[in-house]
Length: 278
Image (cartoon, rainbow, N blue to C red; front, side, top):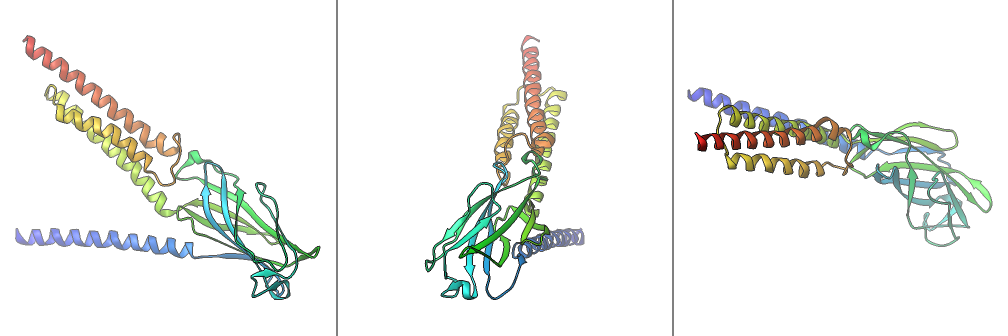
């Protein structure tokens, strides 16, 4: 008996270790992907470096915010790229914001640039994905100058992948939900169904065993109904109602719990009435 207890404890510890190890592996993979940057363009000494960082992906508004820092190199800049040697105009592929102009000899500050997203739909959450094309060109003294574009991300809710590039220095990117978001959303689906099934089994027990009005049990069921709504609102990324998460788990779980509460209360009331009249 003692050895059975030791074996059980050892099995629990091994399971915890494996789960923690898997979590560390997923975290390491996501961190490595987040630290990865992609570049396209020319590496000539006299060029314009455009460093674009994905700050935030707004799937509802279908746009991604890039924080853009322009660094003129070589003869095109001054003070190690802090300011352009002459008036510089940065042309971008955004349909939401116009081109930017940087006066000569003035310090260049980073700027947030919204880029429209295409493809995908927020209602596919948590399996939604979006595409966009990022491209920059630079003109100085009325002449086009070489550009080196570098793209990375800091938004932890999305993963970034480059699906293609063109000869003019543009990048095609795809944004999908991060692994941590996908895993948590799937866990939410499972947990919602588990709670709904637990409440339904409890209601069945009350009805079949003819337990009458058991108010603590009804309180648990009613609390589960509202707890599911709060749990749903905790979904990472704050997806709107009507997503795949709702149609595969949340709405059905809410319906199951509501019907279970109704059926058990009605059956309990009928039983109490029968006991009083009998």
